[in-house]
Length: 491
Ligand code: SF4
Image 1 (cartoon, rainbow, N blue to C red):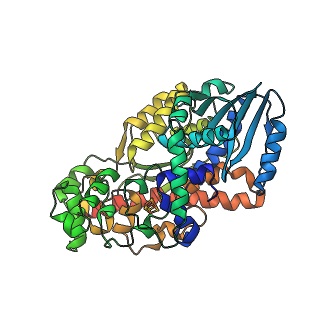
Image 2: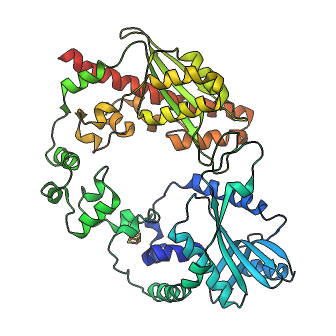
């Protein structure tokens, strides 16, 4: 079969991905990796700048045209080429960055990740193999990736933002493997009947396979892969031992928390509420009470001063305020314009809306705390007030994380996305699916990052939808808070 870098890497993960892609692609599920792809494109553009002026081979569905263009550029003695394309016996590859110095070739594979994984080595090894077979004199091969320790101060320093790792020895060591793997893939793809392949760790690593639902269709409805919080390695180990159904798992020696999820599901158990524990939690909370939630975005290439790759940059928050238990609930919010660093305006708005020494509730507070701490570090003049807020945050997630309040609809999770529908199954005002345009955090961040693409008329509606989404996050917290307070009243 005709291979490319990505197809070869799919084959390294599992040959059946390629077979299903060819014969049963209708079973492929969507995996949300748009942000990863966007980040990858941006990283590629910046990495090219590291090397100075270059010739680019433009994409063409006729791969021969790309190869011809590459060969033209390669006539020069010294040249940098991006997307230089080659084909050896049906094994095609485009090299992210190729440097030719006199007669020697240097290959660079660019990754938006902050670490080098084995699959990246196979990726560049495949390219090395193709060019080697075509007779090129390859001096070195490298992986270019993001330096997570880089902090931007002033202009971007590309030589500090990127790490460049020489992996030539590994690529040479892998040559025999690449050759035999290509042969194996070609033989595998000759099979007309669907090959039998059991599920395993390779269904999740290095990437989540889009065919897992299809390949696991033989499993019982509730099975080991539905257990929350268990590592994938442990799930696969249990699967391999034949401990698969909830019934089998209930009689096996696993953590009590997993057993509880199974027990509730299998035995249709009623809601569990440990009143004393819930009351102890409630007694740590004081009025006035501020329910806080941030939305953030992450970028591989730090845009602003004092930021680092993949740092969480807050651009929006929602705040519901209860002055007392019986008072009306107030709502305030902030959404940055989208055309400049949002952090200082957001931090000022936050300290204007949250006085010192009040109780602030977040759901999974480690996230909100880390955002506030970073703001305090960046803006020393606002630090005292911000750190006061930081020190007064409490976590509404605690009763659910500790399973002091649990029902089977939570399916072993204490994430608000599970807890909320489990507590309010029939309330359309709390259903994220009923929102327009923005339904989750990743949609909120990608919408914010693309605000510049909307017309003035569209923008008003887009911002309205973003505000509604974030407002629902803190409104949901208010409802959860009221719900657990009913327990206190019932007692
Ligand atoms: S789900 Fe697993 S077995 Fe099926 S194609 Fe993907 S990796 Fe292979």
